[in-house]
View 1 (cartoon, one colour):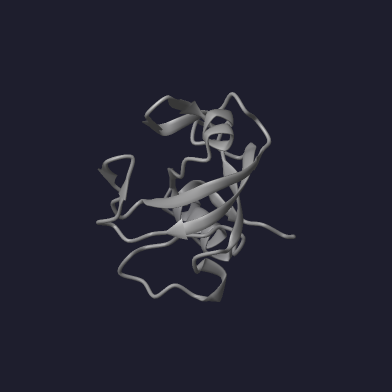
View 2 (cartoon, rainbow, N blue to C red):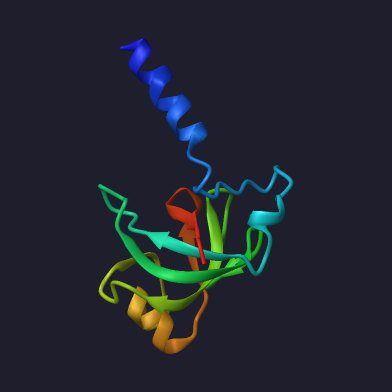
Length: 120
């Protein structure tokens, strides 16, 4: 079992397409504000793409919808929904889905583990 966990850890480290932003980490060029990303579903299995977005911030004390981002979330702007019905992890005023966030133009908090660099 330990071998399997080690192998999974190595695989996740090697998957450089995932953007893991920690406020203690220095953001590399691929993680800075303005980076185009793909939001992945936050529900298991979380491999499904739900929207194209742009990173707006990752400071843990930054408020998004009146709630601090914290260390595990990134503030994003939804540029183009793929699955408009995907529920937000943190709802905002009159905004429950990815489609609502796109239509309203509100920024949202999305888990950093569910963000992938856009190839385009």
